[in-house]
Length: 314
Image 1 (tube, rainbow, N blue to C red):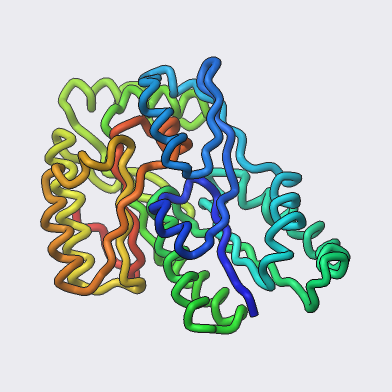
Image 2 (image 1 turned 60 degrees about the vertical axis):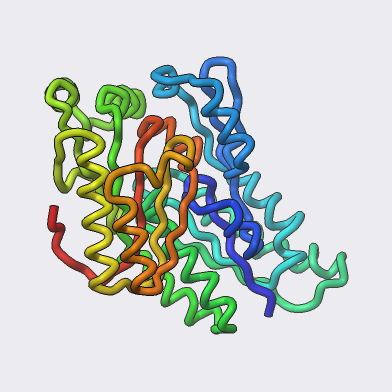
């Protein structure tokens, strides 16, 4: 059985990893002023976004996730002909309508795939399974990495889906923003009251940064640090501890809302890399999606891993 994975563009994974494993990307349209971007994890498009230096104007960006019709076209014109089973992994349904769009599209896809395959001379049934990663940005990555591993191991679709649901329920996505004013402005634009004006002003005045976590569909602060550099050191040090304690999926994904060449220079990153090397954990580095950057601001860091449930230790 030919099996593959599809993700939405806000799932932060390296382009090389996506290409190596034939992972399809459901794009997100992003408009900032008069500039239009197709967020499909294309490094050139991400570079174009960064080079335009849109800065604080990005908080007013309009984003449009892949529509129900777009998902149907992707599957009926391509994926149902190339695969026999596709696992669709999306950002948490509590933060984006993309999961709902994919589920709605699946009804038409499963209704019409047979005639499409018969016309092309492709025999047999087609399966489509939708999995909510219950996290966002780099936090969605562990479930995708595990899906690839299970497919390579020739596991059955039912077993893969069960395991991915378990991994998604135990995936942690941490984020360290650079600019609280930006984060507050974007939250206000989207009607999200999670970052209040007083907190943004006080945090910026004292250079206090929140450490945010996405876990089981919920996002919110779990700690705070003084200064971005110290925050990076704290976050990477914490993840290194979790790596040594043992992960459910032997991979950690780090995404950065800027030039990836700056990532190794952040305090604490070398220690995280050493912990991964010592334990045989794969460290995946990815640029943050354009969607991610317009939602949390350029220069932010996100880290994702899957582990058994544990208390936050910041």
